Length: 320
Image 1: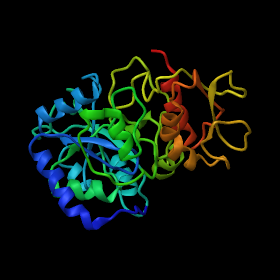
Image 2: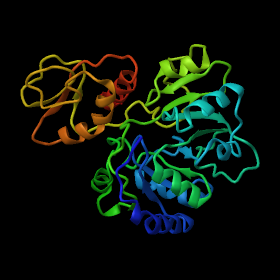
Image 3: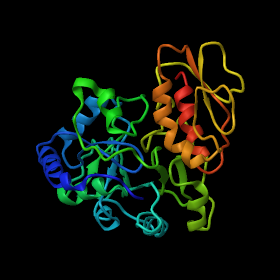
Image 4: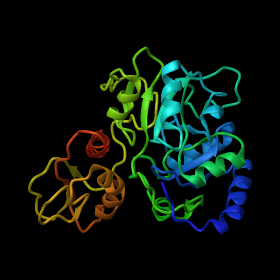
């Protein structure tokens, strides 16, 4: 992916970010998916600041980010299938946003707060060049949930982060708009058959093509939360959200998909799921406006990236 950024300013900005992270502070960093609220994954006090800033339930673990597969192997135990997925999806040629939930290695300095006390850890390698360079320069893994208050819409621009936190906003590395626009796919790799914990930017079809076996696609909502994004209500705007709507109610904002008339905004005029994914959170933010009484969303197919889109929308529409 190509990111149009003025890299002449990056060295000084990255040094400031690293200094803050070493001091146990929180930094908002761009990734290819959404902006992340990054803290030293080995520093419990720093992780606490992430939870406090997001007002995040302590039982909801964080994704730990690494600059490469080899670095992640120092903290997690990779099965042969996990190795296969990491080798395929975490390299520049085939990169897709994929998080693997793996057994946590003993005797590492990883904070238990980052994993919410579990014996597993969610790991991923981002593809955004600023995130990768920050991870390389900092020299330690970064725990980084989305850079927004819990249950709110995930940020895909630096301005979204500023607006979300207001005067509580941390130092923000502005890397431009996120190219994928929806969080990483999360797979539980701790059982014999990989299980989908959260749909995201890497499609089920792509994963199964690499593994040559099907993955489990249904999870028990009452099961212990093993990864981010498993809370029933998540990614929610303040307005009520209705899904699979053909005709909106009076004073409802109407979010379209494909050729459609009288929509307020359209995720993709051509019905392109990749474009819709990139626009999802940004358009939900734009429609989350008190001049409307609610947001209605047209039907979106649950294939490919549409599975991730519908997962986010269903969580946003939940009243739990």
